[in-house]
Length: 401
Image (cartoon, rainbow, N blue to C red; front, side, top):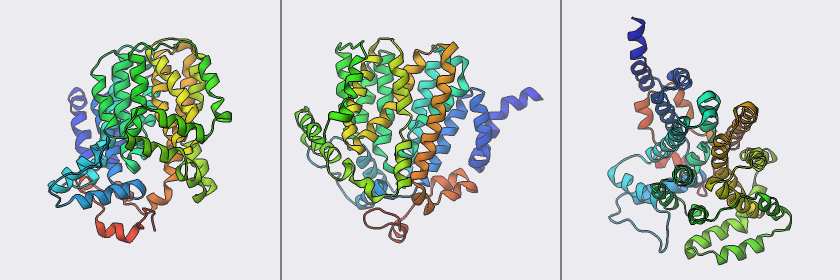
């Protein structure tokens, strides 16, 4: 009888998830710790349901308005030279097929978690640290997903997840199928074009073994200016529309002025939202292991240093760097002395996750997130924020009332 119960346990947990997802969450976590892959899928589904309930403010408000504007349109149009059309095309399809826009959030978040869980399970086959310390590894992988970034902005966070899979295939597994995910990342958010060139350089044979160049790049924090960054951007071989968009983040309002519109608490939470990148880079510089991923990270950290002159670019590159650095450290980890370091990283990741939630606290106050406490999965999948809700709760510029 006990064996039958254990055999049927996945079915009952899935059934509870459908009826009452919040109640099933503790059971899902237990099964995740027991290394059950179906539980990872359910956990990704749960986070996707939470994303559905995320209120459309800021960037998400503008994407939602685009969705409503697409309703009834016969043709899908893009600006000349626009690369990142994935979200807009999906919005057009969903709008004209009568599918709620919220389901795009569900899929973006769901597949982002599926990607990192896939990498985790694949690495577990060959990485001793993950095999022997699975619980802390799953904790690190889970909190490395930029959930708030995906739920709030959709494009950049999901594009990062796609790029992670591309990097994993190209630089770790040495499989060219990774280029597919790199291209998908670029057409999801144009800013990942820069990462594409870094990956291409490494694949073409650029091999950087010395990390001394990283220390030199740190001088950018002191000597570099937004003027020089603009000059570098102008020299990059990228489409004009992409160059214009990146320049908007490199100078002006989004280079730092937007922080003046928020409280000290918000600014502190924003800093903590990417603080994990600092200990990760510190540990990275302590390890002397060459390889393609090592060369890529050296180039990426140099880029990260240069982007320090613009707060928005710096935050974005910091958030992107976290997962590749985690992959590197787990791949080269030594069981005897790395456990404590990985534990420290897990604490930083939890702080990062909580800080991101705190920075969106006013947004979440007007949301329907409370419905996760009593709703079933089916009703949550059909949940939507209609135009009437938008007009009552969100201003024209995307700020909550």
